[in-house]
Image 1 (cartoon, one colour):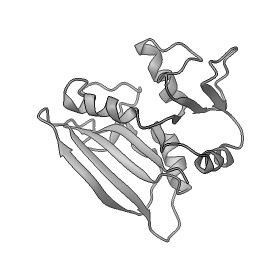
Image 2 (cartoon, rainbow, N blue to C red):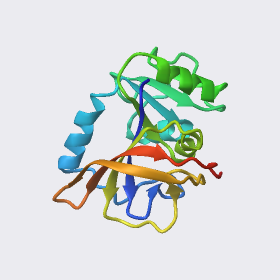
Image 3 (cartoon, rainbow, N blue to C red):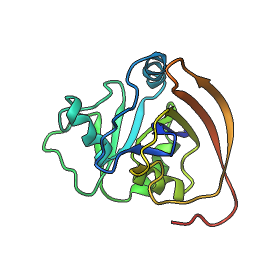
Image 4 (cartoon, rainbow, N blue to C red):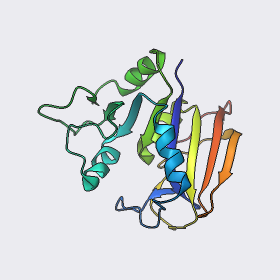
Length: 185
């Protein structure tokens, strides 16, 4: 079974973006960026919510086109619709849970969960996230879009690796172990 890896930038207080979806203060230069771009080569599928996909528009992404040319994009949205999407872009609007479970059963690399918080919370609620790789930036937002939206869960995380870069960004890689109790939403 292919693992889903939530690989995302986050503040010290657990936010992946401001309430408006912006990410001021996230470091976009340094060794951690090179390491992140190299890590993306290990994925051939990415899953994400609509807002995460649309976030790419401000960086030149065209609607219906892949953000990562070597990956198939599975975008989970009941609102998004493209007239003629690229063959690597698939919008999943129905039976999302079954779709993800089927995707995990296919052959291939680990699946890159690009975001966002609400979608990650949905996956966490259904115990589908296997690993978490956080690019923890040395900033605090106070409020914003939480790492897992409004989902609360009791998890044990087993550290795989921890790297601190010269610019203060830390890479925290953990395996997720779910505790046998109901996940609260």
